Image 1: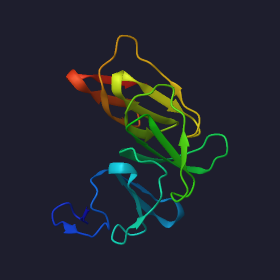
Image 2: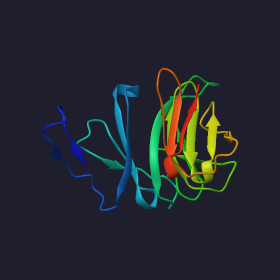
Image 3: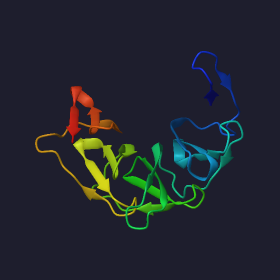
Image 4: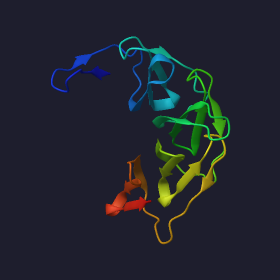
Length: 170
């Protein structure tokens, strides 16, 4: 793990794992919390991006991305992590994680939150959830390209993937 306050000088910190890490997220919720996810269900948390604690994700699947959003039903902060083997996990404290069912058995590669959780994955699959627990498929007609990343801007959700796939949802 590398940290920087100016994106010029970088400092390596000990993550406490030798597993590959694929995604990192930050939440200002609860005085700030960093979460890193990776190979074989690796899930680490840190209050300062320096001291990392391994958490039990409950999965052996590779975790690819993590985000914090708000459960629309309960108005509570909810973390969501996604990964290979149709893996979607959620947590309200980043310590105890619950496996969630996906509408399609595909690798899920990225997740973001705007007004709802949006996750993207293999075969052009796009999943959405208002609470981080119950997910529905939100297919795009004619799009079967693997999707690798999704992000929410102030205008829309954007997803990108294989073969130049570039999707927008307003």
